[in-house]
Image (cartoon, rainbow, N blue to C red; front, side, top):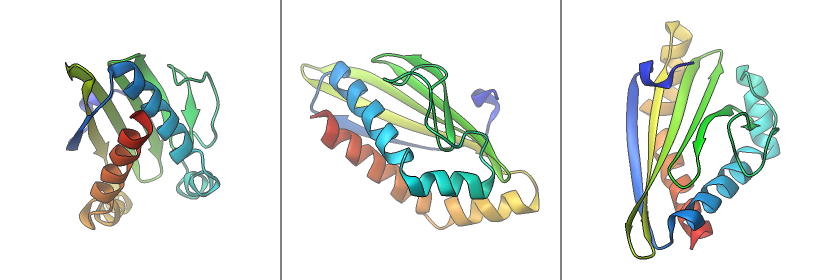
Amino acid sequence: MQNASLPYIDEHATVIAAGADDVWRGLGDTLDRSFSRPGMALYARLVGSVDRTASGPRPLAEGSTFPGFRVTAAVPGRELVLEGRHHFSSYALIFRLEHIGPGQSRLCAESRAAFPGVAGRCYRALVIGTGGHVVGMRRLLSAIRRRSG
Protein backbone atom coordinates (compact mmCIF):
# COMPACT_ATOMS: atom_id res chain seq x y z
CA MET A 1 0.00 0.00 0.00
CA GLN A 2 1.31 3.45 -0.80
CA ASN A 3 0.06 5.79 1.93
CA ALA A 4 0.73 9.00 -0.04
CA SER A 5 -1.85 7.91 -2.62
CA LEU A 6 -4.58 7.51 -0.01
CA PRO A 7 -6.96 10.46 0.44
CA TYR A 8 -6.15 12.80 3.31
CA ILE A 9 -8.63 12.59 6.22
CA ASP A 10 -7.23 14.84 8.96
CA GLU A 11 -4.33 15.68 11.22
CA HIS A 12 -4.15 16.05 14.98
CA ALA A 13 -1.21 17.39 16.99
CA THR A 14 -0.11 17.83 20.56
CA VAL A 15 2.84 19.42 22.32
CA ILE A 16 4.47 17.12 24.85
CA ALA A 17 6.75 18.23 27.68
CA ALA A 18 9.36 15.57 26.93
CA GLY A 19 12.29 14.99 24.62
CA ALA A 20 11.89 13.17 21.31
CA ASP A 21 13.37 9.91 22.66
CA ASP A 22 10.87 9.80 25.54
CA VAL A 23 7.97 10.63 23.20
CA TRP A 24 9.12 7.93 20.76
CA ARG A 25 9.06 5.34 23.57
CA GLY A 26 5.68 6.63 24.76
CA LEU A 27 4.31 6.45 21.21
CA GLY A 28 5.38 2.84 20.72
CA ASP A 29 4.20 1.71 24.16
CA THR A 30 0.84 3.44 23.80
CA LEU A 31 0.16 2.07 20.32
CA ASP A 32 1.14 -1.43 21.38
CA ARG A 33 -1.07 -1.32 24.48
CA SER A 34 -4.01 0.40 22.78
CA PHE A 35 -4.21 -1.78 19.69
CA SER A 36 -3.17 -5.12 21.21
CA ARG A 37 -6.14 -5.41 23.56
CA PRO A 38 -8.40 -8.45 23.08
CA GLY A 39 -11.28 -6.30 21.81
CA MET A 40 -9.10 -4.92 19.04
CA ALA A 41 -8.18 -8.41 17.85
CA LEU A 42 -11.87 -9.32 17.71
CA TYR A 43 -12.71 -6.12 15.83
CA ALA A 44 -9.84 -6.71 13.38
CA ARG A 45 -11.14 -10.21 12.70
CA LEU A 46 -14.75 -9.03 12.26
CA VAL A 47 -13.86 -6.39 9.65
CA GLY A 48 -11.38 -8.69 7.91
CA SER A 49 -8.17 -6.84 8.73
CA VAL A 50 -5.08 -8.20 7.05
CA ASP A 51 -3.08 -7.91 10.31
CA ARG A 52 -4.91 -9.43 13.25
CA THR A 53 -2.24 -10.09 15.87
CA ALA A 54 0.70 -8.39 17.54
CA SER A 55 3.97 -9.67 16.14
CA GLY A 56 7.40 -8.61 15.03
CA PRO A 57 10.07 -6.50 16.66
CA ARG A 58 9.53 -4.48 19.81
CA PRO A 59 10.07 -1.58 20.20
CA LEU A 60 8.06 -1.01 17.04
CA ALA A 61 10.06 -1.19 13.83
CA GLU A 62 9.33 -1.88 10.17
CA GLY A 63 7.42 -5.18 10.00
CA SER A 64 5.92 -4.97 13.50
CA THR A 65 2.18 -5.59 13.58
CA PHE A 66 -0.75 -5.29 15.92
CA PRO A 67 -4.45 -5.78 15.16
CA GLY A 68 -5.39 -3.60 12.21
CA PHE A 69 -1.92 -2.20 11.51
CA ARG A 70 1.52 -2.96 10.15
CA VAL A 71 4.52 -0.68 10.65
CA THR A 72 5.73 0.17 7.13
CA ALA A 73 8.32 2.80 8.12
CA ALA A 74 10.01 3.71 11.38
CA VAL A 75 12.62 6.41 11.85
CA PRO A 76 13.18 6.49 15.63
CA GLY A 77 12.52 9.90 17.11
CA ARG A 78 11.07 11.24 13.84
CA GLU A 79 8.40 9.25 12.01
CA LEU A 80 6.28 6.13 12.36
CA VAL A 81 4.01 4.97 9.52
CA LEU A 82 1.25 2.45 10.15
CA GLU A 83 -0.82 0.98 7.34
CA GLY A 84 -3.75 -1.38 7.25
CA ARG A 85 -6.50 -2.80 5.13
CA HIS A 86 -9.79 -4.56 5.73
CA HIS A 87 -13.05 -5.21 3.86
CA PHE A 88 -14.19 -1.58 4.02
CA SER A 89 -11.03 0.53 3.91
CA SER A 90 -7.34 0.91 3.17
CA TYR A 91 -5.72 3.34 5.57
CA ALA A 92 -2.56 4.86 6.97
CA LEU A 93 -1.73 6.62 10.21
CA ILE A 94 1.46 8.68 10.02
CA PHE A 95 3.07 9.98 13.21
CA ARG A 96 5.63 12.76 12.86
CA LEU A 97 7.69 13.93 15.80
CA GLU A 98 9.67 17.16 15.99
CA HIS A 99 11.82 18.78 18.65
CA ILE A 100 10.47 22.28 19.36
CA GLY A 101 12.55 23.34 22.35
CA PRO A 102 14.37 22.08 25.42
CA GLY A 103 12.32 19.17 26.76
CA GLN A 104 9.46 19.82 24.33
CA SER A 105 8.28 17.90 21.30
CA ARG A 106 5.39 18.19 18.90
CA LEU A 107 3.65 14.99 17.80
CA CYS A 108 1.41 15.07 14.72
CA ALA A 109 -0.85 12.21 13.65
CA GLU A 110 -2.03 12.32 10.03
CA SER A 111 -4.80 10.00 8.89
CA ARG A 112 -5.33 8.87 5.30
CA ALA A 113 -7.89 6.39 4.04
CA ALA A 114 -9.88 5.15 1.08
CA PHE A 115 -13.36 3.68 1.53
CA PRO A 116 -14.29 1.90 -1.72
CA GLY A 117 -17.79 0.92 -2.72
CA VAL A 118 -21.12 1.27 -0.97
CA ALA A 119 -19.97 -0.68 2.09
CA GLY A 120 -16.89 1.55 2.32
CA ARG A 121 -18.98 4.70 2.16
CA CYS A 122 -21.21 3.37 4.94
CA TYR A 123 -18.17 2.48 7.04
CA ARG A 124 -16.74 5.98 6.49
CA ALA A 125 -20.03 7.50 7.64
CA LEU A 126 -19.87 5.41 10.83
CA VAL A 127 -16.21 6.07 11.62
CA ILE A 128 -15.54 9.55 10.25
CA GLY A 129 -19.02 11.04 9.92
CA THR A 130 -20.01 10.42 13.54
CA GLY A 131 -16.86 12.06 14.92
CA GLY A 132 -15.66 8.77 16.39
CA HIS A 133 -12.32 9.02 14.60
CA VAL A 134 -11.64 12.49 16.05
CA VAL A 135 -12.48 11.32 19.58
CA GLY A 136 -10.25 8.26 19.17
CA MET A 137 -7.32 10.30 17.88
CA ARG A 138 -7.60 12.84 20.69
CA ARG A 139 -7.66 10.05 23.27
CA LEU A 140 -4.70 8.34 21.65
CA LEU A 141 -2.60 11.54 21.61
CA SER A 142 -3.54 12.26 25.24
CA ALA A 143 -2.44 8.76 26.24
CA ILE A 144 0.87 9.21 24.40
CA ARG A 145 1.39 12.57 26.12
CA ARG A 146 0.75 11.02 29.57
CA ARG A 147 2.99 8.02 28.91
CA SER A 148 5.83 10.19 27.55
CA GLY A 149 6.15 12.66 30.42
